[in-house]
Image (cartoon, rainbow, N blue to C red; front, side, top):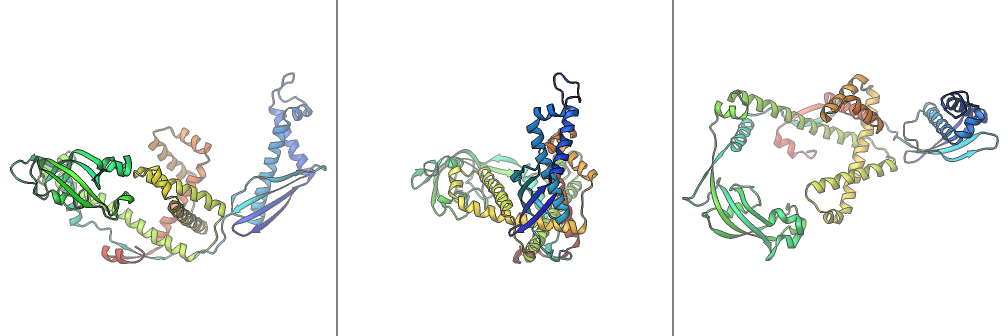
Length: 446
């Protein structure tokens, strides 16, 4: 088999193959023999049909399998001979079955980028402490107290700060009902009945709760607020909204005492000190996870800045579409309409492209580091991971494995695990400087 690989810019190569007639004939003979041994044809005992009959009956299947086999062997030889890292072998093109029995074809290969790994051990990163303070534990306990609060109805005084206002309201913009201005997506803010509103800073719409202070049960008031630049519906930013409000009730929260009785309501048979320990453990775990993410982001930024290389255009296009689909789904979940999304097509595409390029560059760098450090995932670890997937799906592991194999996802899972282990390796090797939360947030990397 004669194989020629011509590398081109932007991670592309052309693989040209010529298979001599003797090799073609030998491969065809082998495939035909397999069909003959397995075929069940009327008038012949299994495995006894003449090859001429087999070739006539299964000629197309044999020819297709022959081309696939020759293509696969050519790709394998090209990988071994040229030491290529191929992302996509494409499909045989310009297939020429010559009169002498030889076959020639070529294909476009998409190659992984070639680059020199930058320094990746001992990268310097900054991160705040993962220590959980007493103030943070107390704040969490206060949140839990608020959840278990009981509410007394108040009728002998006006509404004041830290009360709960029970309100009915309808909203207008320039005298028009909100739904006439922005359509059905404004339903949540257009009209509410029996809406419980905490009277404290940051509650509901900015500036609304403050203007209710002093009202008495049964009072009506038109409250006008200016929608800021962070308002979810872009077309309403900077506009004034009027909420035609009726205060139907006032409630005062009665928080439970911080004692063992309170703790038992949260988790039976647990004391307050045990609840504090549980809160501390959970917060510590969550903090550590968040801080590790901050470290990883810094490591990835440094590696991407230090390693410069071209990406395969076809792969970027494919990943950009995946990211665009993800952004659209995120928008839909956040309540954006199809019209909103269509109006931001250019911004979505730009964001998707940036995400795609960053993700691909990071993946190639991490895969290269994994190869350099010989980071692998043994079959036993892969099987354990798939077992966890099966438990989450509440399905038999054999079924999950079969589904993953059918969708060619086994190798993808292994690759993801390799990437995860490579990130863990980089975190272990990094030089971490602990800084205060304020100092971390003030750094450009943050």
